[in-house]
Image 1: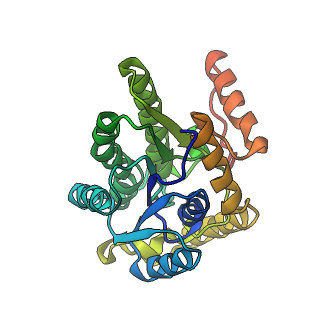
Image 2: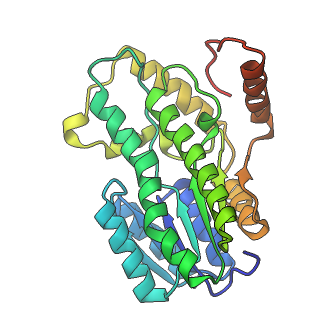
Length: 279
């Protein structure tokens, strides 16, 4: 999708982090912006900042776990700006937890509902209209390096992100088979300076648990890794380039790529996984 100016982008998880950085970048490219998030106050602040730059913006408070809300988002975007040309399924949460844990299954469900089902709902809602209008469109699904390399004690997150990678590959192949004018990209960053380590702020009250010694130690590790990560604007620039150039893979961290090639080599040479953490 070489020309972005005057076209419309819908971005979920747009109140902060990578989502807000993408909104800034695509606004600078001249796109109409439809930004959505589950946190009303940060979203309002984001909209104010985007409008101050002169970008056309519409905002919606949504929970991507709810298909009806995503369908309403699509209808409202179409009513305000017409056809949607870019969808960034970016809303996501970070969550740990051991596979052997027996009392956190609803937190697993919460994580997978947001990170994977939210993306599935977005694709199934927006893709048919993109195919039909034929003006050229693109979908960016936010996965993670955790969609290529499964660290211990991050089970729900790993499952959700592997799922997003698989969904994106499937959709890309289907668009090529159909001859549709819709590109697909999957964003797979390692650590980025965002608020993902504080995802528990959006936990439903019934799922909240007091931190344990183990969970506190894990969060401290993740906080340090996130603090040392790259800036969200760097990620947004890579996403923009991928949309323009119709690149499928968006790998933002060169130093993480050996984790992918190493895992592939382990698979074909029958090497068992090692208990590593990180990429």
